[in-house]
Amino acid sequence: MKTDEKIITARNLVKKFGHFVANDHLNFDVYRGEVFGFLGANGAGKTTAIRILCGLSEPTSGEIMVAGFDAHTQRDLIKKNIGYMSQKFSLYDDLTVSENIRFYAGIYEISAKEIRSRTDDLLKRLGFEHAKNKLIRDIPLGWKQKLAFSIAIFHRPQIVFLDEPTGGVDPITRRQFWDLIYEAAQGGITVFVTTHYMDEAEYCDRVSIMVEGRIAALDTPDNLKKSFNVANMDEVFRKLARNIE
Amino acid sequence: MRTILYIIQKEFIQISRNRSMLPIIFVLPIVQLIILVNAATLEMKRVNMCIVDSDLSSTSRQMTDKFKGSPFFKVKESTFSMEEAEQSLQKDKIDVILRIPQHFERDLVRNNGGKVQVIINAINGTAGGIENAYITNILMEYNKQVTAEWVGVSTKGPLPVPSVAVTTSYWFNPQLNYKTFMVPAVLLLLVTIIGMFLSSLNLVREKELGTIEQINVTPIHKYEFIAGKLIPFWIIALFELGFGLTIGKLLYNIPMLGSLWLLFGVAAIYLLVVLGIGLLISTSANTQQQAMFVSFFFMIVFVMMSGIFTPVESMPVWAQRLNLINPIAYFMRVIRMILLKGSGFTDILKEVISLAVYAWIILTLAVWRYRKVA
Image (cartoon, rainbow over all chains, first blue to last red; front, top):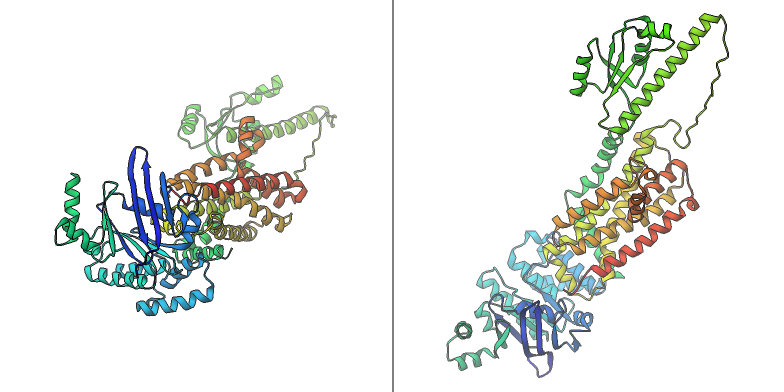
């Protein structure tokens, strides 16, 4: 569902913490409807960048537009149009599945009636109907991740940001999670996802690879493999990392 | 605005699922009211006393009988050895020594005056002072009696002894019942503890869990979030006040002279301040531990300076000025005035205005301090 319309543009995005430069002049565009992979080792600056794009953190400098709004001055408008799921778990352990959905949907000012019908829909699609009234703490991690993702797009945002969404689960569950991501992308939601699983990079339309605060490469997985003359993304990544060292 | 309702709903569900919450809400007030009200008393009853009567005359016996008959003293030991008495005092077995020297009666008759010695354990200065006052009172009484008897004996007829008669009436607490004084204060402590701790721990808990990120990434307004966090605990604390008042009435039959509506009205404003401080702490702290320590610090200082045990008026001037920012001091005055004196709105207007201004400032600060953007 990739289009030519730019939905995120970043020009010279810089974020400093004191003297430490976490994001060093990042430049990239994300197109509406694509699955954009944001790769990098731990500490490369992925989370910092994603937090800026979500309006959770203030950029030091740079022109950043998300869903048509300025990341310096229009953060609340950005927030209306995006969804976010972070590696740190965002569901309330002591609320049930449906209570979690209702709470977040309520914050986005979706009407009570609409919440009910969309909740039933969602649970049916995920096959979670039987777990509707289970506490989050009692359901398996894989389910929680799927649910967290579904809640992040419950208000039908234009973009969803996923910060290492699949940490700690087995490859099958991860594959299922990616099915959900594709489904969302099919529905026209732009997906911006960070990961350090290189097999997941293959699932993206385009990937950018961050090394030490800079974007070291940005292209489709196929083009990257060709230009580095390697068989898989894992090797692309290693080559890039080695160059820096 | 509907957003706030969703937050309140969520908070109440979480509170109801928290197993430790119900005991805190229902058991804490009962325990506090029973223990604190009965234990934290300045009334002196049955102070342990040792009498060293070296005279063993009928006069000295009359005098010791006065103490034995007094509800304030319990003559626990009698000895002839001053050394022994002092040892008991040292060991904390007794708090007061009354020493009647040899030839007390003889001196009284011959020289028109006898001497007794009183030694008081004054580690707690206030208690020591009160004990001294009681002893002096008993001795004066005894003096009067002796004078009257002897004057009567010597002149066969009452001589006019000039004296000033003082009639005292105690207002607002005629029986000088310490419990009447303490129950309102303990109630106040109760709602303050519940309010401040619950609110200060709540928001920071979401920081620890990471759920606050998910909230911060929504278009929710800061005031909506703070209001949604504040209102549940506000309702609980007001309920707690009602619950505590009921227990106070049942257990101690405390007077409720003023309007309960007025009391709850002021409590509602007061709680905004307390909860606001809790939330302010919560927005600034990173862990529940930090929030707990800071809340604890403020609680202790505020409570000790609030006039709960010692009158604010007798504190040094600088301390009284510090009480300007002590919300507990305002409400301490108000709750006692309304319940015990039956004060009306105009009597407490100053406190109400102060608390309202305070609430406005604190809540503004809390909203300002809550950062959606790091």
